[in-house]
Structure formats: C-alpha cells, structure tokens
Amino acid sequence: MALVYIGIGSNIDKEYHVANALQDLDKRFDDCRVSPIFESAAVNCTGDNYYNLVMELTTSLSIHELMQCLKDLEIIHGRKATDRRYAPRTLDLDLLLFDNIIQSAPPVLPRPEILYHAFVLWPLSELAPDLRHPVSGLSMAELWRDFDKSTQVLRLAEWQWPKITELA
Image (spheres, one colour):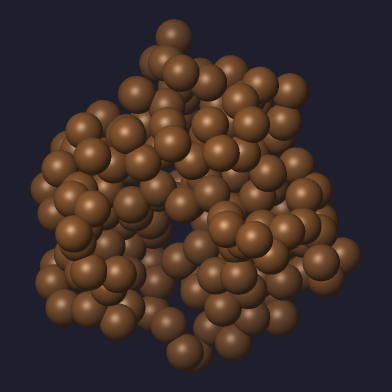
C-alpha cells in the first residue's frame, strides 16, 4: 500500500464540492485523514476565494490508476477537460506525494507546488509535520517554518469539515 497526499481545492460552490469530494475519497481509499481547510484568494486567476486542504490516504492503485481516479472525480464534480489551467474550479485534485517517489515524467512527483504555494504547504504541514520532502529531506514543518509567509495571504476557513474518523 502506498501512502499518498492529495491537494484538494475549490472556489465554485466550495462547501458542496469539498464535502462531496471528501466523502467520495473516503469511500474509495483506506486510512483517510484530512488537514484543516484554509481559505485563500485565487492565485493566477479571478474568482471567489478558494478552499484548500490536503488528504492523506493509502492505496494499492498505481500512480496512473490513481491519477485517472482523481480525474474522474473532478469530472463528476463538473470540471471539463477544456478548462483553462488557471481558472475557477468546482474541484481540483492534485497528487502531491506518492510514497517517496521522485519522478520528472508526468505526473511530476513530488508536486513542485509544495515548495512555493502556501495553500499546499501549510495544510500539508498541519496534517503531516514530520513527513520528509523526498527531494529536500526537510520535514513539512521545517519547510513551512522557513516559507516566506508574506507573499500569500492564507487563513483557516470558517467552514470546517468534520474529521473523517467522526464520519464513521
């Protein structure tokens, strides 16, 4: 079983899509845990503020099978293949880490955004502070401690999803 971290984002009907995505992922995968939900302004696009969080899970799927599963969930939630790269999203599911795999072929792992977007690193550091970045060797807590927080405004969202363990 692989230990995986998925970045989850939404800025269109965000409570609905985040809640449903968490339920869908929890049904499909084992040992799911989620970070707190953070709210941030849209980066590189216009639109409402985003909700961002990270989910930890385990899976027996391959990287490519998991990527297809995530794409299918995005489509179920209204994402179109024709959507621009930086555009408002009903649901955005990004594979951040897959065990300690490092690869430059798509999907690039670990996902580069871990190191330069607060909306990825902060939730990841809250969920797995001792997890080591496969390339830098630093823990997520160390990376967040050293991150230039003046470049991106991020706050805990007022709306929070119950812990996955509370759903059972």
